[in-house]
Image 1 (cartoon, one colour):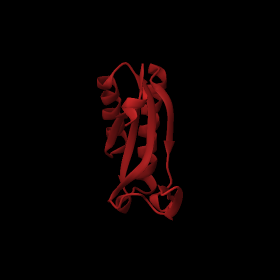
Image 2 (cartoon, helix red, strand yellow; image 1 turned 30 degrees about the vertical axis):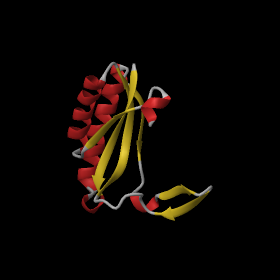
Image 3 (cartoon, helix red, strand yellow; image 1 turned 180 degrees about the horizontal axis):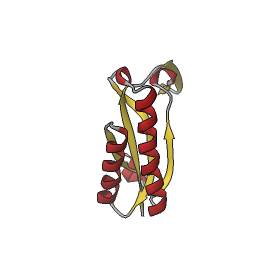
Image 4 (spheres, helix red, strand yellow; image 1 turned 90 degrees about the vertical axis):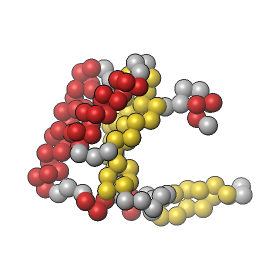
Length: 119
């Protein structure tokens, strides 16, 4: 089995409120329950908005810390699932369900299985 990150991307200028958010949480909770039942679920987490981000950047033997997201873009990482699947096709199938449930783009990225994969 391989592990995959299903990263939820969100446009923070268009976040849902009230009933929309409750419906979205119910849908994504159902997908998470389905993942658990199928043995694919490892971990899930929602993230605070990007203003709560701190970037720690190495440079010349020291680090700098700055507030805010690393990239200046409309879409920010909003949450994620970590799943385990036999292959990428199975991970993409789960990502399809996640995207439909939360109404947001899902980035699928395999975890590195050895040091060469991480480069």
